[in-house]
Length: 528
Image 1: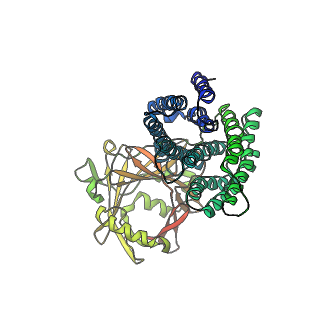
Image 2: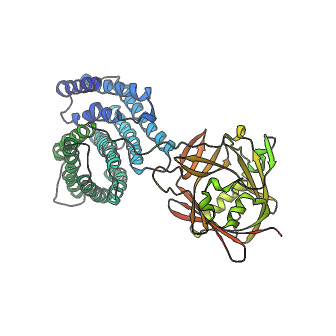
Image 3: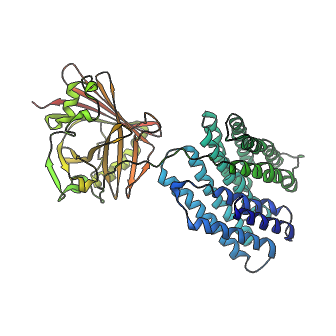
């Protein structure tokens, strides 16, 4: 057992037995002094050691101990504020994890939301201790703090850890229900009994689905399996108490009191859910499957205006014939013979072709495209037309020095429509785990967007996609901020084919959260 956990447990017992507060205050104290610190100790190596969280956790334990042992004192509000600041630091930690990782690994997202919910619980605890008039009587303020410590932080932490062991369709159903329910339930308790009933029903769907998922999940050992399953299964009992209480608020002649809820709902959650869950997961915290992307990124970013402007006065800049000197870096010599030679020629001798494009914004995204167009007209990057008219794209391909870009053999492809800059893309490549990717960077204001594309052959057609072929693939769309890749919920898919008349056709499809929002059709033919 960790030394700090022994100290924290002894302080909790001291506060529980010698405090003049009502006995049920220990339900929240157990979370603040034992459960939350132990779960926060589950840190991934890449997250590093945060002195603020490390010392903040110890400070929070001391603050809560003093509050419980000293009774009503002038400094109570200051101590409550210090605890609130600690939970805000935890919430910022969750937001930071979320931003650094981007839109990937839903189980880690659930963990991050749990951190944010702890910050909300910290506010309600501060409001209770400082006797702030929230519009509710003090006991309800205290119960709201319990709600966000247990149903918010702890449940979502358990949910995230379960997702590291097993993800399935039922897991996603349970997860999103449990994420939404704490906020809806808190709003329902505060403002609307009907909303409270609806949120409890949503909770029931999520929790019983979660219980079924937990019983189908394999754990590290038998003891962890027993404790974690008891923890999740206990929720199936306590949520029924919540439903009974919610119904009593809208039905005459049916009464469930707060005292009854504290006695049964609260105590079962503290022991059967909290204690067994924290104990079970602490036996073997599962490691995150998410890995920080590691591939070469471009050092070139833009200001408020981008376009060809970002390369002016830079090293290099000689004209180049193609986007790549030798396309065989993407496909082996055997495979190269199966990709149509005209497609290979286009990538190696791009300046010998004329490019015609027809941009099709999907109807549901069109209003956003109009707003984006107002910005892109100024930045001169990804400045695509709104109409579906066919335009010829002209431009040039220039080299970019390795020292400036940070990658090797980079080519800048500057494209224009009617002499107006459409976008500039920096093409390079990198090899990882035996696979070579097309590494494309688009400078953005003070950042960049990287498209890491897998190159695949389907008969004589060429497919380039940011969709991962396997879990270890680098493929994806990333926002690059200060050299750090953040996964975006975007995917792109190119299909290049050759027609009998010698013309190349390419279809470029962009999706956000899996929904197509932009399709560009290209027709490519040799000059002359």
